[in-house]
Length: 270
Image 1: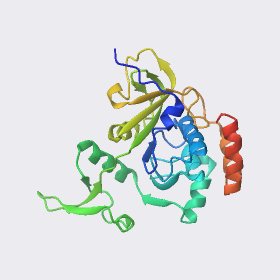
Image 2: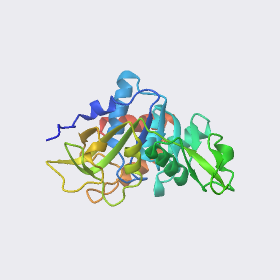
Image 3: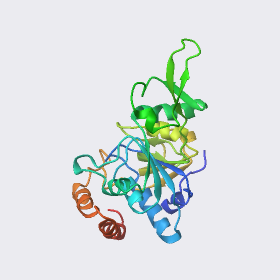
Image 4: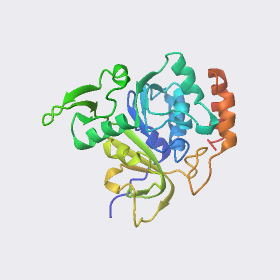
């Protein structure tokens, strides 16, 4: 039997280092690793680390906005950052409007091809995406190449490698197999491309008959009941609209954000 990969949330948070690219799984307000982010915020309060993080994900939501507001993030790579029907992500909006964040322009295509290049073990992935748009002007690191067979000009999307990827799962076993549910977003690719993969799970099971993430991909497993709240974790629980509305109303300024965060941390993130 494979040795248990189970660790505590505090131990998982200690795996993120200054300057890391931190990828957070989930989709908008569904299955986000919020409990892990809370542990990371507790560590930052106690030790002043980590900092200067690059936040990576298909989308950014509540948990990412907490990291931005608390000053852990200097760079953002995502194709959407917001709270769906609850409006803009207030701290991301506040800091971005004041040039306090470096925003690396991304689309679904650039993220997908960048991760695919990493999975293929090559420096870039060619594609037709972005051709004929103004996006290359915003990303001078995305260059063009000529197809050696057809002579066609293609965009060359550089490989993306997260240092740490954190995915919240419905179920996991202690070996690292995990069930993500129907909406897997880009979690599998973020896990495959990462240096270290942490799975937080609503439930730890003795063994799983099937898995969306297989044990060899996962380095650590953490038991985190209600670990996505106030985002949803269908079918376990719906999103907490009251908390999200309170956040958008209160966190429009650094002072309001600090007051919200203090209460949210004391309330154990629930």
